[in-house]
Image: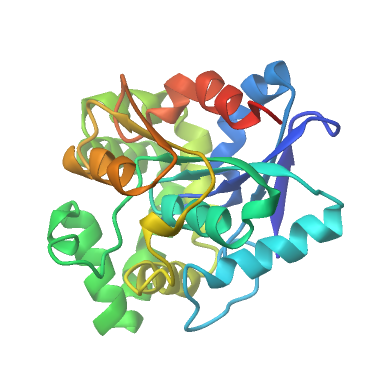
Length: 271
């Protein structure tokens, strides 16, 4: 398993569950905030992505076993968990499976279980297409992702402009301000396109638990200019998770970049 480690070595640990089409590097932008807040960020690559070995047929809940082995190896007893976008259900899985070790969970711009009626239809068109392509024609999905990786590597400015157009004005501003990092992160995520294909297949499988099964405190975060997540989803997640708090702030799908301090501070509360 590959992972990145940011912030002070003696800080309170927050495990990051990266987004889709992303990897362990997606939390790097939060490093200055983490250092100021005394937070150590541990960000693993999911199976088949970046530096991590593949695990075909995996489920969302399976990832909890991987992370438990990692934190045992690092000698970490207690932690908070942050999951952004596709990483939201993986953060929830840690909160469910490793509850005695979890201080608090933050789900930022997260999705409902896609196996539930009507949930898949609520996804943005780009996410629906990539998920269906990964399920039905994985080889074709890999070819498409390889093309994307080449573009991110050789034409980063064009790649970032294209990403900005699909995300909307609020997110285009964030991405354009981190152009080189965003392109490099995507290229690393696509080191092995088959891993991203499996990631999209996995998030459309049953989680292995329900939102109602979570017993740890959970903060649900959503940006009021988010074009990828339906505005009903955050309130629905917060309604269904017993010990949850709904936080609506400024920004789009990348709203965490505007609110990292508040998110990280909440994860360390009562640590």
